[in-house]
Length: 176
Image (cartoon, rainbow, N blue to C red; front, side, top):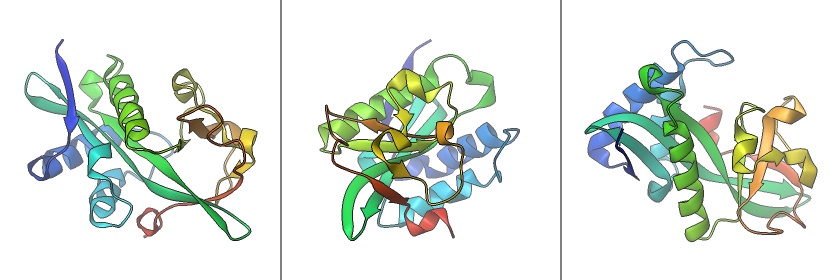
């Protein structure tokens, strides 16, 4: 299996959205509109082209990941971070390491281009393998009610979140 992880291009957009839609079609705890969110995020100010990646298998796009800008706010102070949302792999290629490859590569690029942390709302048994811990470890809260173990953060460098706490503010596209 030869997986290529690369930056998404404009000509990939429709295919990527189809991948995202298929990946979440039968998923639990979703409104099944993640593909629409991806399209909206690309048009917004939080979009970072270098952090919108696709996974190709034998020339076909089978996975997608997007990290976008967010803020952590605390009493007037604002700190930049990233939202990992969504990561998608078409059902017939799930559980083959493609999602892990997308996450690992996106985190590597995020660190290389200067980001210090990443926030994710996701499976508490999956994301810790990449180093994610409950965001509450650093006093970081979600802007909505969510069980602590599902709202996680990752430091992309030692101590990156050491003096940061507050509430996450997602880009407006997440709530439109």
